[in-house]
Amino acid sequence: MNTLTSVYIAIGSNQGERERYLQSSIDEVYNKIGSVTEVSAVYETPAWGFEGQSFLNACLKVNTRLGAKTVLKNIQDIETNFGRIRSKKGYQNRTLDLDILFYGQDIIEEFYLKIPHPELSKRDFVLYPLADIAPQKKHPVTGETIELLKSKLQPESKITKTGIRLKPKTIPYPLVNYLCIEGNIGAGKTTFAQMLAQDLEAKLILERFKDNPFLPQFYKNPKRYAFPTEMSFLADRHQQLVDDISQLDLFAQFSVADYDLYKSLIFAKVTLQQQEFELYKKIFNIIYREIPKPDLYIYFYQSTERLLENIKKRGRTYEQNIKSDYLEKINQGYLNFIKNENRFKTKIIDVTDFDFVDKRSDYLKLIDQVLNETGGINK
Image 1 (spheres, helix red, strand yellow):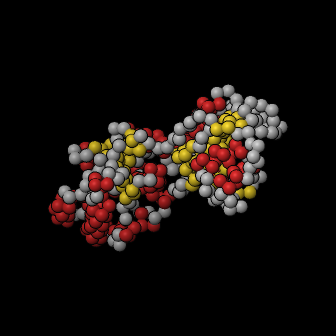
Image 2 (image 1 turned 30 degrees about the vertical axis):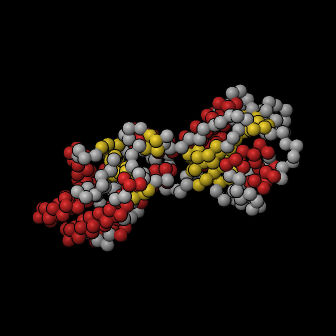
Image 3 (image 1 turned 180 degrees about the vertical axis):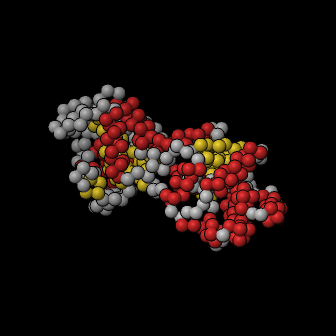
């Protein structure tokens, strides 16, 4: 999973319904590239470099997980979908024009992609709107701020600030304080929780499975190491949830976790001998009563075949000998739990055919399914 990078994009139009084209381009940038977190005022300028109708221009700040080359391809696709015809004849009228100004602090010098945009320091229709949303951002080559570059423009600039207000577009905020994303081994719950927490700047609670000293031995010798492994998981999960969620209601803070403590009982039932499990269950029930419960519990279902593919792909050595029947037992344990759970809201989502890491469209579809279960969104 890639981390988020801030990309600044200039948008412009001088043909047809210019304002509508600009707002529609924001929606398409959101759909194809990332959340549009900031939008400048809209400025009107005469056509630059050719005779034509005046342009409406604005700048966007976009948080994306895509690489710079992919961002370029996607904005070119957006332009094409809005009827732009590319030509080698120089500057022309455009229904929609999108340019990458900055990609993080990267400096890229390639034939078809140059970042920072080589002409941005000369263009009032770029610097005026960019100064609205990033006045102190420094040019990675010159070190000058956008505000300083703007002040160096020729005073006879004919740019005009309009009263048009474009709307940013970001992932909606759920109407829950505590969201739990669960799933079988390899279902993608952790990756999704990380992505959602990044996009919403939420508190992220991840299971610290790497800290369990018994797990590698358990996969080699399950009968010998099952009980200490499950007890270690239970103690660690309990302590972490007490630390991270006990003050949740006090601060009304949105948190997203990739596990609920009940998973300890699900795995223990599969791995422990009957006498061990009865003892474990008594300890678990005492602990579970005091743990805050999620407002919404989402279970990511994936087919066993897909789970095994994911496990192999992520390459954790100690997981490579996991058998399909073990995964099926774990899945059945989750389904039984969800069927009988009445303390909080639960939902099963089949993510077998989702590639939400590499396909933003799948990620947004999954977001919609999750948010539909929260009963609404925070505006």
